Length: 124
Image: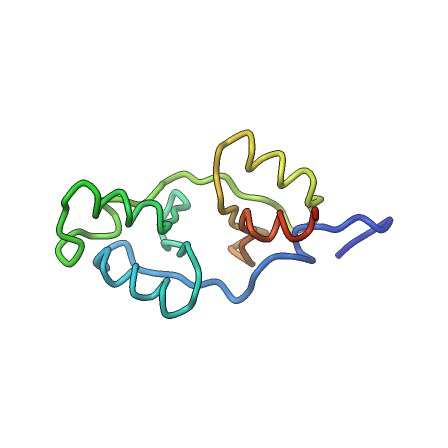
């Protein structure tokens, strides 16, 4: 929660999280993102993983069959995460440093997600 009039990741994060199996098809992931009007899904694996609309677009651009391709074939593994109490300015700096558009929020487990859109809306 925000302290000293500074906004934390927890104040801005999206919940509940949308997840997908690593064995699902990339087409199913794309359909779920479109249905939920989001651009990333958490993949419940260890290490922590994510599939984004960029991963899907790259697969399509490479001419791969997204109905046969599994999420595990294109997902990003070992993703950066943020703690709920992290200040938004720090989260924005992390996203810029790592060149990422989505940052899962993790306490003991996933609790939310922030995106570059959330950061932009907060900082403007």
